[in-house]
Image (cartoon, rainbow, N blue to C red; front, side, top):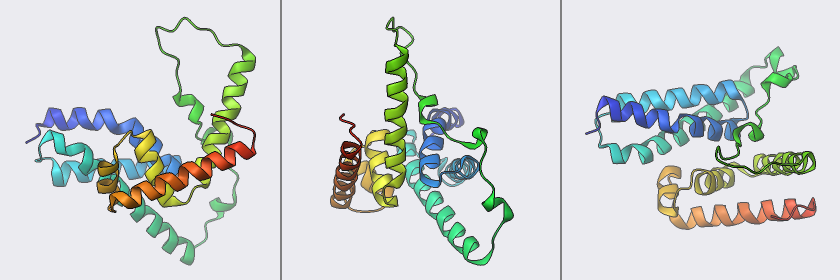
Length: 188
């Protein structure tokens, strides 16, 4: 049984990563925030009495389901309605920037030249764009395996599919990313 403090600590520890993952999926910060908050509420309401070691897998599964629910609602909404705000161009403040999440280690004494910094910015921008172009299931498997650092079994449980499917999705995602980045002259 997880105590209230353990549940609170767990939610604080996954908040930022869950938000980043959701932004990658839905490409909208406000919607991503809603998805993460909804997932956290469902975990607390329905599974708060589970052991603390089960919370990470439960939360990943709930987050995946909430994201899928969001896509279903969007599909229905877009089929029925059209908002004028959909035709507006997002301002600079509405963009998610992967590079803002990167930080040099606090104890690092290394300085980076402007040329290196600009090159890094461009490479990460290209990587982010290519990740967003992946099919949804490949993107989800890739982000869970390599961003969330889950193993194959955990990823399969979170996605609700077999371990073989996870391996296939990850392999295809890596191949597609490698091919796309190689075509742009980026070698990692």
